[in-house]
Length: 435
Ligand SMILES: *Cc1c(COP(=O)(O)O)cnc(C)c1O
Image 1 (cartoon, helix red, strand yellow):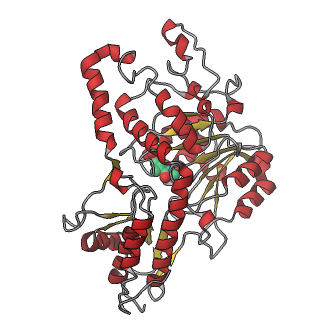
Image 2: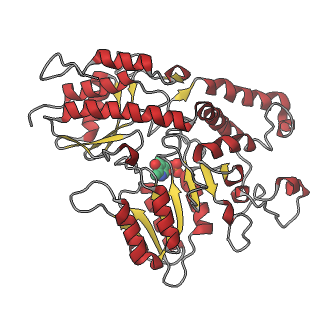
């Protein structure tokens, strides 16, 4: 494939090629509502912010209204009657969620929101004892995760500054090397109670080697959990086979289930039914067939459902169910294939644009070390200012992380090659060359 240029200062970057690629490798954009941008001048935004908030599937509205209608028609009977009774509603999400993350159905449940779930999982899986007290995170962990682990340390009467270990890339490097993480665990793992890393780093877009780090952490005697907020729906997973202890992910980023959507949880089956594990319980922790016996003592099932506490918000479950069904029908392997082509294409265009501009791609260049997101560091000006101009002047919606990182996520379900072309074209027009 060649890229034709029609100018030197602002290369046209082969717009015809982008259209051709969209014809031959179309994706599923027609299943989504794409918002306008630039005050309506761009009826379809080039939406590259699906790593922050995914777009609305067209199917969601009708499905949500059907659940609302069931309440109107059935009142309390809706718990047991109707097309999707509320009592077992979470079970409709279990199989597709399990397929999404490579788990057994007994290992996944959709409940609460992400940080809440991380806390509930740490109740069970962060149990500092003796010299084994430390929690390992990455220095660029999403702030919520950092606050969560620091508050867990305090909850156990420990000093968060000495308890939480923040792994940094080597000087002059942007990303953590797997061997630096596994090397740390081999050397100091006897002091580590919990490893809790982001599977894809929200800032750099680096995909960690989840199986290798999980194996190293467990070999060192630590518990290994993963925050998969930027992985679920982005990269295929095999949590069961990788022996991951636990994981959680939100559903409003790549899973397109709406702002603040419910989170998914994975607990490996080797922990199910373990009476030694502390858990916080409520009436949804007890086995479904005993729930209405209203006994004072719970009888939790030997599945991840033992970690549930409350009856779930049905109107929040609906959009997750609709989205998971879509992922189930397309399949993560096919999505990942398209994702590699789409992000590779954006990378190639960005390389043309950044050649003579003060911009650097900080995401790993090896496609097996990243998901769909490419993060660009700007040497001048503010990331917020740049994304504002991209949005208003070019209809390109990207996400800024101050002071100097702009994130572009071509989402394999609905982003197009032409979206990627618009990003590169807009950057070429917006960022002064020759700096
Ligand atoms: C998006 C994100 C969160 C958000 O947490 P909520 O509890 O859903 O508000 C947490 N951690 C990571 C790594 C994220 O990317």
